[in-house]
Length: 279
Ligand SMILES: Cc1cc2nc3c(=O)[nH]c(=O)nc-3n(C[C@H](O)[C@H](O)[C@H](O)COP(=O)(O)OP(=O)(O)OC[C@H]3O[C@@H](n4cnc5c(N)ncnc54)[C@H](O)[C@@H]3O)c2cc1C
Ligand code: FES
Image (cartoon, rainbow, N blue to C red; front, side):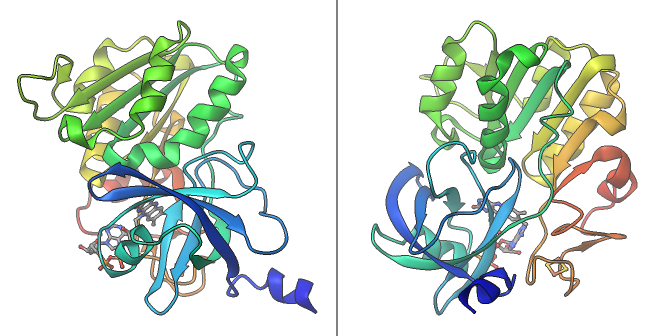
């Protein structure tokens, strides 16, 4: 009987917060462990519906890959009522988890090709499991470039990981900020300005892009100008979610439901819609 209930996609499983790590002034990373049973497998780019009891449920991507640890890791920005309640959870607290849902990044398809990761702000969170998977099997890929853009130096996520990736000789990592004080000695400008000077073969590369929609629009256009076909550019889209299984229509994006056809979609499938603001 219990097994049948667990299979119902509307019934959350109970997880306990193992640790909370402050990442930014308004964002934390939660390590979650199942209270009973085992955590299901998932792919980089997929998301869970996290339920703050008595407040509500929101979509949050996994921010660490399935091969690391026995639970889920999520980075949550306090953007409103539900995400704020999640961001205030303390170790030992419980919450509901439904998932995993949605499509993943095309990591397997990228084998044998150059890989270009383009992240804006918190968009690095859903991309980190894909980066971890590529770096764990580094020899299977061509050149690997990670481009990260943030508003200011204090908005840079996962600084420890970025430092570790930068130390590797087989990965090109560039970080840029929109605005900086005199204590910043790195790149200044939008993340899209890094694309033309990145080492990749546009005919044999896969790009994975995640960030605010306006940033993804410019990044997609920059990648296409650099010669990449729309079919090799993948974006992770965000829409308000309710059911997360393609039933309620809350996340409709033209003919696609972001919860089940996405969130990761090739640009060639959504290019026309991406140009329409507020769709
Ligand atoms: C597939 C997917 C993956 C996501 N991954 C993450 C993640 O890893 N970390 C994270 O912090 N957030 C993530 N989000 C965004 C997160 O779901 C929203 O921030 C959250 O739903 C806001 O709900 P709230 O009740 O806290 O705020 P609300 O009070 O509902 O909204 C706060 C503000 O955010 C806007 N908003 C609400 N929902 C969304 C949305 N889905 N997209 C864009 N704007 C929205 C509202 O219009 C409002 O301006 C993801 C969303 C999706 C769809
Ligand atoms: S959230 Fe219900 S259809 Fe996507």
